[in-house]
Image (cartoon, rainbow, N blue to C red):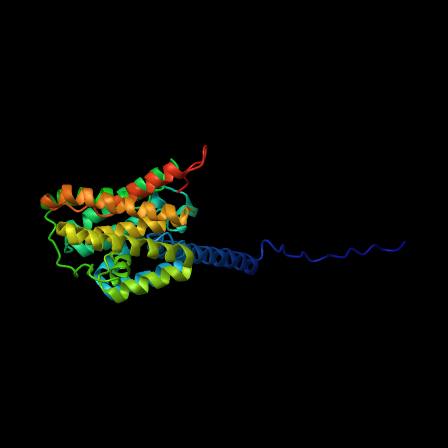
Length: 325
């Protein structure tokens, strides 16, 4: 009878139990996490720069970098403070879990960025300055998100609100005024280009012209019509100052608010004649507010622009149409 021979088969180690495979899997997970984290950081960094472009209705992080560079050429502390405020605004939006798409396009942070630039242009930095700026950045983000939620174009309304509050509390907060650069000279057509830069507190005509050129690269049609409207308002303003010299003190406010109104209405798709009407309305509101507030030294910032654009958008919307931000 033949003997049966048993053969022992060596056990094959399981791939899942292999130390090398486990280390490789762990390394792959870590690498994926690092790639994800890097992409997230880049997206958030783009959001902070896009906020500067959104001040001029431009949804572009690259354009925001260029505009930030122009601000830095005019006033480096203002540019740095504005950038820090933009970062703080993004952090606030992340903490509140606001819409990532709106945050990364700069729509939730441009009022914060503009507030940071304005703070540095108007007051000297100290501990109170920093703390109150952080509070104002948070308030601007919350107000912007609230207006957007109710389908109301935020424009620079939150910026006006926090700056007006800051102006009212500046003596209590002991904010020290800073002597900034002079405003625009309304004596020539270059005033229109200078007004473009004054939106972000840039005074030199050359930098205002550069700012306008950058905007024209993004949306030439809307920017050209805004320039045409601003030029028309400047011509009317020049004629009126010959019979009403006191109007000259409102030159800066009229230039900024008229240009922004025409540019904003262009971005919202309104016809050129409507843009001109909006710019004229903003200029008239400047005159009224200036006459009322000038004796007390209160600035109105970009309130006329907001009031004019909100009014025109509501009057020109189609029946049943929602005015989208």
